[in-house]
Image (cartoon, rainbow, N blue to C red; front, side, top):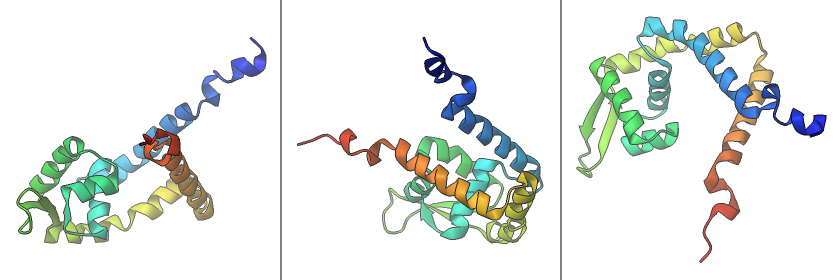
Length: 156
């Protein structure tokens, strides 16, 4: 095996390794910042989605967050217990569960506005660098999505 072939299996050359370590490292920065708000990072993501649009169905929320209902449901229950959201059956379709911010959930947004600048400062990267990184990660997400690959779609 040549050095070039061996390099393909070097841990430091693995995209999956770099993504996993970067993800853990960045999420660790969020933990102490979110703690005073009483939120975990996954709960923060749910709140971000709801601050954009509320109410939303569980299905819409799951789609926005790329989470399946079994993963999302415990997050929603904890946010409801904390008084930040309500979960109610839709008046339009009884099978649909609508998730809506409570007044406390809406008010929490003002405190959350301080989070992005703190994360930017903690990372010590410029806004253009972080914007480029985010766009590149969205490219990776799209490239890794089986639905985005034309050959993965069954023919006829």
